[in-house]
Length: 145
Image (cartoon, rainbow, N blue to C red):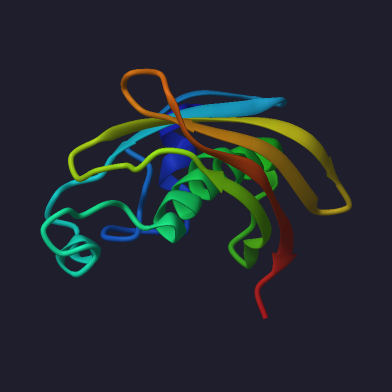
């Protein structure tokens, strides 16, 4: 499966698409990047004068690159129009702030995928290679109601 095809199948669009590039995908995990543009709306009110990327956005970025892209890869051509990859749980540690215009790299490693459930260990690093957050994310593949 072509990496750009995976991005095209993501159920998101700007401004809620947090995947710029998918660098790698196989049955064990994914690697991708995203740069947080300083003009994203959430920066306007998040720590006035010293904006940082909210943890919920960092978690969403990790989920999109590390879990949803992996789920699409694992389903390959079995992804149907009525299929939804739903985020079900997260246990994330935030280690360093991520600032506007900062590029991050997210890598995931599949823990398990069976019975429509996907669990991954995901790490986000900044351009200096420092971990900014990491955690365990889970989701499930289900039919749209």
